Length: 273
Image 1 (cartoon, rainbow, N blue to C red):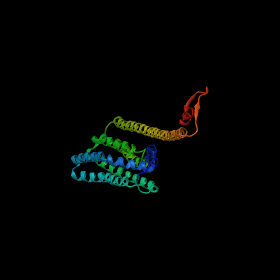
Image 2: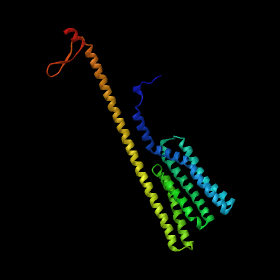
Image 3: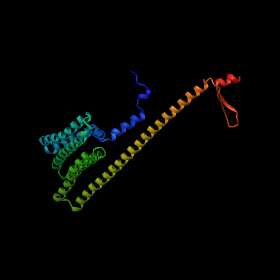
Image 4: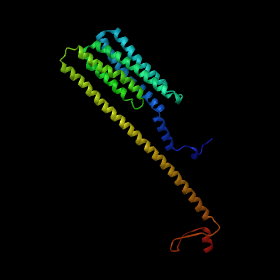
């Protein structure tokens, strides 16, 4: 059975509905799940790198346990998100699913902090900046998902940021380095965190602006499509009226204000010769 063109939805309306679905809580959750799973290989690469460093400094036993714990937390998060991204489910349970992703995000962040703690203990004070850089990268990665899953982003930040500050505070208390060097280290981390926040904040603002501009463009396209349909319908009616007047048996003539004919139908032409 072939559907008529009139019964099919307009492309503009379909695009607007698709945009609304993407911006809904369920659509944002789907986007979050898909992006986290797609970028998982980068996090696993960092886990293997850190595991190699622990292996070099502390031996295979400690490295194996650490990699199992950290990679296990990451794998648990990714497997759950992969399964969640393939299920539409009941929209009424969307907030329960978002809470589940936030809980798993906290578990994954705790596992990451455990791995960073072991790495810091293995390398010693020489690896403090390296561990801080990884922790800061995890913080920025977590914050980058704030626009589509705020709960999961906050859960990771609440775990990772205290670890970052605590590791520096512990070094400050135990290190024999001059105080001004430790202060400079902490100021460096604070500056990096600030610029990271500025970058992510500007990215979030641009994200909202792009969405607003895209919504306005789609809405304008829909309105133009409605006007075009109305214009096409008016033109169709005008053509039908013109054909009716042209084929009418009565003579019809259209004149300008000066009384000159500028259009006559066939009946008028036959009558007047």
